[in-house]
Amino acid sequence: MSFASQPAALPLPVEPRADAPAFAEVYEQMFPFVWRCARRFGVDDSALDDVCQEVFVVVHRRLGDFRGESSLKTWVFGIVNNVVHTHRRSQQRKEPSLRSTSPLLDPSELSTSGEDPLELFVKRESVRAARTLFLELSEDKRVLLMLADLEDVPVPEIAQLTGTNLNTVYARLRAARQALADAVRRHRAKIEGGGRG
Image (cartoon, rainbow, N blue to C red):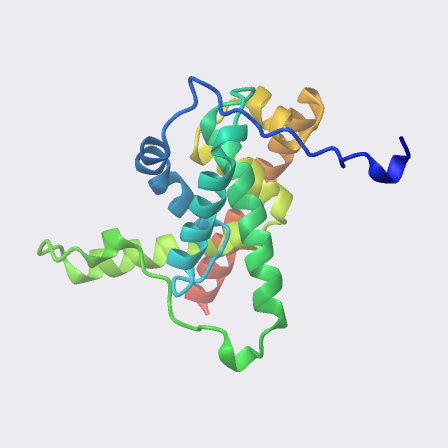
């Protein structure tokens, strides 16, 4: 029999794990995490819903491939990271006039609890300043701080997710924390210096 007459080998379908979580459960459990991560990555509020939707389209498509070698949160974070990168590349190709310039608004800021307007303003400005300083860090530092300090992902899982030596992750995390602390110090000095002038 000639090679040409042999049927082509088809890839075997991936059998979903019997204990794989249901998509509805994953969505319910992970949506707040995905939203926070996308926002912390600097996704504009006008695109946040679309980016989160795209993350869950990928999660739905690949959920059968989840092998439990890392936590579900770590696995989903890898998808968020990839979707945000794709979104950024797409945004960079657009004309500046097509990019949204709407201010970022946290749902917690919508509260009208009768709080003192000055206190509310100071809180909002503090949150904006912290977010700006965070976004000015390099992406690798932001990712480490997001995972370790904001989402409490254990450092060994971060090492596995990033394919990095455990000791290297610890060293980079220390450097990221120091970089953020330095940025906060410079910001405070700038404010205090400006207040005296």
